[in-house]
Amino acid sequence: MKSSQFFILLILIIMILMAVTNPGMDDYVSWVADQSSEEASNQFEELLTRFVGEPMIRRASSRNNYVIFSIYETNIPDLNGEESSTTIGIFGNFFVLNSPD
Image (tube, rainbow, N blue to C red; front, side):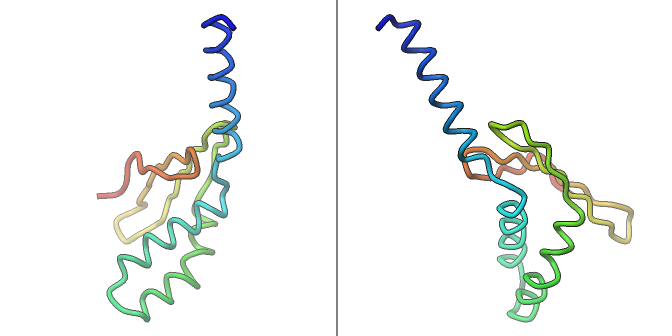
Protein backbone atom coordinates (compact mmCIF):
# COMPACT_ATOMS: atom_id res chain seq x y z
CA MET A 1 0.00 0.00 0.00
CA LYS A 2 1.35 3.37 -0.95
CA SER A 3 1.86 5.96 1.74
CA SER A 4 -0.75 8.28 0.15
CA GLN A 5 -3.35 5.47 0.20
CA PHE A 6 -2.49 4.69 3.81
CA PHE A 7 -2.86 8.37 4.73
CA ILE A 8 -6.28 8.60 3.03
CA LEU A 9 -7.43 5.40 4.74
CA LEU A 10 -6.24 6.72 8.11
CA ILE A 11 -8.09 10.03 7.63
CA LEU A 12 -11.24 8.12 6.62
CA ILE A 13 -11.06 5.91 9.73
CA ILE A 14 -10.57 8.96 11.98
CA MET A 15 -13.55 10.73 10.40
CA ILE A 16 -15.76 7.65 10.86
CA LEU A 17 -14.65 7.44 14.49
CA MET A 18 -15.45 11.13 14.96
CA ALA A 19 -18.93 10.69 13.44
CA VAL A 20 -19.70 7.69 15.65
CA THR A 21 -18.54 9.45 18.83
CA ASN A 22 -20.19 12.82 18.04
CA PRO A 23 -22.19 13.52 21.25
CA GLY A 24 -25.90 14.30 20.94
CA MET A 25 -28.11 16.84 22.70
CA ASP A 26 -28.97 14.41 25.53
CA ASP A 27 -25.26 13.93 26.21
CA TYR A 28 -24.74 17.70 26.27
CA VAL A 29 -27.66 18.35 28.63
CA SER A 30 -26.42 15.65 31.02
CA TRP A 31 -22.89 17.05 30.89
CA VAL A 32 -24.03 20.61 31.67
CA ALA A 33 -26.23 19.35 34.52
CA ASP A 34 -23.31 17.34 35.93
CA GLN A 35 -21.04 20.39 35.74
CA SER A 36 -23.67 22.49 37.53
CA SER A 37 -24.23 19.82 40.18
CA GLU A 38 -20.52 19.74 40.95
CA GLU A 39 -20.64 23.48 41.64
CA ALA A 40 -23.62 23.15 43.99
CA SER A 41 -22.84 23.96 47.61
CA ASN A 42 -25.32 21.51 49.17
CA GLN A 43 -27.51 18.52 48.31
CA PHE A 44 -30.65 20.65 47.88
CA GLU A 45 -28.98 22.78 45.20
CA GLU A 46 -27.67 19.63 43.55
CA LEU A 47 -31.17 18.06 43.38
CA LEU A 48 -32.70 21.33 42.21
CA THR A 49 -30.11 21.61 39.46
CA ARG A 50 -30.72 18.04 38.37
CA PHE A 51 -34.54 18.20 38.20
CA VAL A 52 -35.16 21.80 37.18
CA GLY A 53 -31.89 22.47 35.39
CA GLU A 54 -32.05 19.77 32.71
CA PRO A 55 -35.34 20.93 31.13
CA MET A 56 -34.18 24.56 31.33
CA ILE A 57 -30.81 23.70 29.73
CA ARG A 58 -32.55 21.76 26.96
CA ARG A 59 -34.86 24.71 26.12
CA ALA A 60 -32.01 27.23 26.25
CA SER A 61 -29.59 25.23 24.09
CA SER A 62 -29.18 24.68 20.39
CA ARG A 63 -26.99 22.24 18.51
CA ASN A 64 -25.25 22.67 15.17
CA ASN A 65 -24.39 19.16 14.01
CA TYR A 66 -21.45 18.95 11.60
CA VAL A 67 -21.48 15.11 11.61
CA ILE A 68 -17.90 14.75 12.93
CA PHE A 69 -18.44 17.28 15.75
CA SER A 70 -21.19 19.49 17.16
CA ILE A 71 -21.26 23.04 18.45
CA TYR A 72 -23.68 23.82 21.28
CA GLU A 73 -24.86 27.31 22.18
CA THR A 74 -26.66 27.86 25.48
CA ASN A 75 -28.35 31.20 26.23
CA ILE A 76 -29.69 31.58 29.76
CA PRO A 77 -31.33 34.87 30.77
CA ASP A 78 -30.20 36.44 34.03
CA LEU A 79 -30.71 39.76 35.76
CA ASN A 80 -28.09 41.49 33.59
CA GLY A 81 -29.46 40.30 30.26
CA GLU A 82 -28.48 36.96 28.79
CA GLU A 83 -25.48 34.72 29.42
CA SER A 84 -24.21 32.77 26.44
CA SER A 85 -21.91 29.76 26.38
CA THR A 86 -20.46 27.98 23.36
CA THR A 87 -19.19 24.41 23.63
CA ILE A 88 -17.81 21.93 21.11
CA GLY A 89 -18.62 18.23 21.35
CA ILE A 90 -16.05 15.96 19.73
CA PHE A 91 -14.86 12.37 20.32
CA GLY A 92 -17.54 11.96 23.05
CA ASN A 93 -16.18 14.92 25.06
CA PHE A 94 -17.13 18.56 25.55
CA PHE A 95 -14.82 21.56 25.50
CA VAL A 96 -16.03 25.04 26.44
CA LEU A 97 -15.03 27.58 23.80
CA ASN A 98 -16.41 30.61 25.65
CA SER A 99 -18.48 30.98 28.76
CA PRO A 100 -20.08 33.82 30.71
CA ASP A 101 -17.76 35.70 33.04
